[in-house]
Amino acid sequence: MTFFIPRTLHCAKKALVSLALLLTLSSPAMAAEPDVLRFGIYPFANAVTIQKKISPLMAWLSEKLARPVRIVIAPNYITHIRRMGEEKVDLAYAGPSPYVKAHDRFQTIELLAAVHLKSQSNDRMVIITHENSAVRKLEDLHGKIFAFGDHQSYGSHFLPRFVLAEHGITLARLLAYDYVMSHDNVALSVLHRDFDAGGLREDVFRHFSDRPLRVLAGPFPMPPHVIVCKKTLDTALKQKIQSLLLALDKPKIMRPFHPDMEGFVAVRDRDFSQTRRVLAAIEGR
Image (spheres, rainbow, N blue to C red):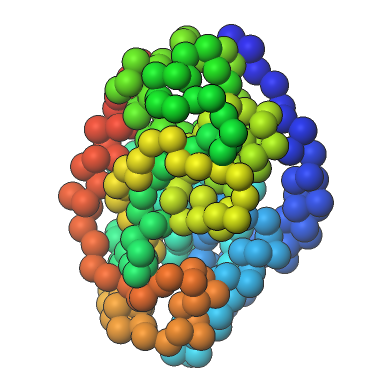
């Protein structure tokens, strides 16, 4: 199998520098600070963007709880999963596959709430191609080059790969594929024609609505992104945080997190049965 790194990834170097600086300020070493609640985040964007999106929510929680809530950005999905599972963070934001992996392997986290968007586009995946591509259906990807995001991402790896396989396009039938780190990079890689197609969340694709990209297949539904906590968190504190999240109705806090966000809603572990089926199908091969 042929692998290569597209030229679009070179632009990520500046983001990595920013991430390194931020990690210095938001590492688990802050555990020594009294009363600090550590909020784990996976690297869904560069560090500066994550801070802009999450900081208003953290400031609001800090005020309501009368104790500091600090962002802890993991360098990758695997570290994020381990930090959740090993209780190195008190709270965390997680997508479907990191939640399932941390929950099922470690049995140390609990669901608090799910992010609810007006468009629900955060909970759908699309497979895209360039507007001028000759690819018209998924079966046309035989012998083509495909972009996945992070290895542990549900919306940019596991579900796209599952959908491809359902249409007879296994990895062996692709000419080549690669993991380009993020949903944004999937869009950029296809936009710059380094790849013939790629899979990503629909809301990320919409950020590129003015660019020459089109949906090849989808949208396909996904379980929601969630806020979790470690099981050993004080019960009263856990209940208070959950109540605060479910009652949140402040646009100034929600809009930076996501422009379509309407609030948080209740969520159950059984809502992730699809995720478990997809992970079993992909990782069992």
